[in-house]
Amino acid sequence: METRQKTIRKIKKLLRLHPNGLTISDLAEKLELNRNSTAKYLEILLISGEVNMNTIGPAKVYTFSQKMPISAILKFSADIILLIDNEMRVLDANENALSLLGISREMLVGHLIRNVKSPIIARLAISDILGKIQKTGEIQREFSITLHNEVHHYWVRLIPTVFDTMDEGVTIIGEDITQQRHFEESLRLSEARYRAIVQDQTDVICRWHPEGDISFINESFSHFMGISCSDVLGKNIFSSLFPEDIPGMKELIARLTPHEPTQSLELRLIDNRGKYRWFQWNIRGIYDPAGILVEYQSVGRDINTEHQQAQTIRESEERFHMITDHSPFPISIIDESGKFLYVNTLFTRLFGYAFEEIPTEKDWFSKAFPDSSEREVIVHTMRADPAQSKYGEVRSGVFPVTCKDGTVRPVNFFRSTLQSGEQFVVYEDLTPKKESERLHSVLASIVNSSSDAITLYRNLK
Image (cartoon, rainbow, N blue to C red; front, side, top):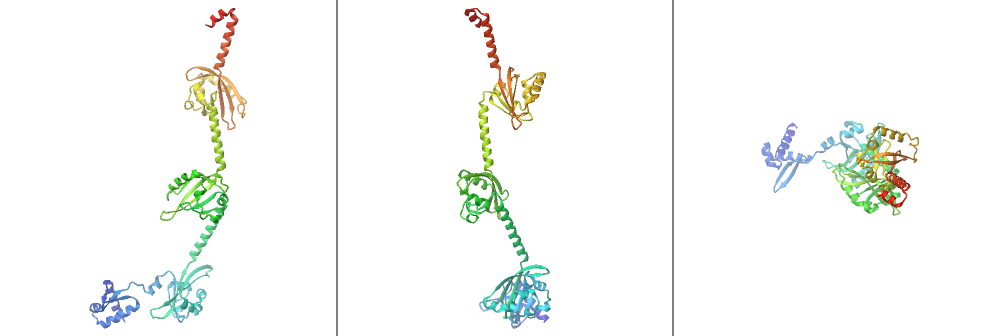
């Protein structure tokens, strides 16, 4: 027996060293055996599947088989494997099967399957379905059992098999899919929670393919578009956009990458009445593990009211600038901290100071009232007004303002506190009025002191 096993090992070693194969004569010569003995050993190895034979002309060439013997499959497989013959006896089982069944190999192999006490074996009902397996072929089953107070799920294949002995039987291959089922259940719950969150969102949510075909919308988007969530197939996201906004959308999505998959923009969506509303959209590119774009997800927040308010503010600001820039009086706006927010063109033209030269009212007063003692009195007079903090009430006061060119002009300051706390100031240059009053006074004096027109004419000259 030991000599035979030693010879078999030598044959397999020789065949491994000669991948192109050896004939019976070659092997007999190398083993120093006669051809008949060598042929018998090769026949044993051929039946067991450990060598292959190819006929080349009149010669039979033997090569080492790369097939894995079933014993190795039983040993290394992570699945549960049972071999059962046509008499319903267990021929073999791997360690996973023995562990799951809780039975020793001696108590399982060689015994009738119906005598094996196991809830798993009982669930398979092999005796009842053997005939069906032999007639129709492979049968697949999935079942759950409770082991040690835990539910386990199994996927089992019952495969009709012809063994090396040419006897028929069944190979049972079972896979523990408990973790897979737990994952699928977790995924199902996660998807259910995701859909519940998405459907309850007041924001519009849409998923669409790179060419624009919509794959999903939530209830808010459904209500906005006037179609049900199940009728989005064939709809294109670009048909819902205001035409002028489409180039901006395409430019944005062209910038998305796996490393920077998110971008935002404002655009208009056309609702089910054909009217548009402004939305702030966050667009995310969704990529597969290879970095290939799969689809986009867009989440839009309705900002139509804010956009209209912003437009109203812009229009109001435009009207304000139009009025103030064409005002016949210098105008300035000063915030609560004393910082200049605005001066109109006539302010600079009259006083000579540009906006950049007088960042604060303090800077302006230091130039307008260069005498510090006089400036202190003027500032105190302005600040001491008890009505100063009253919103909308206009306060006035005339003060001598020194302009950038050195001229001094009497200016009437009209100050009003806005609702925001800012000071709106209008300046009236009284120089023309004072000059007019002076001319009137001079003229009256001349008229009163002259007795005839000739003398009056000469005085005027």
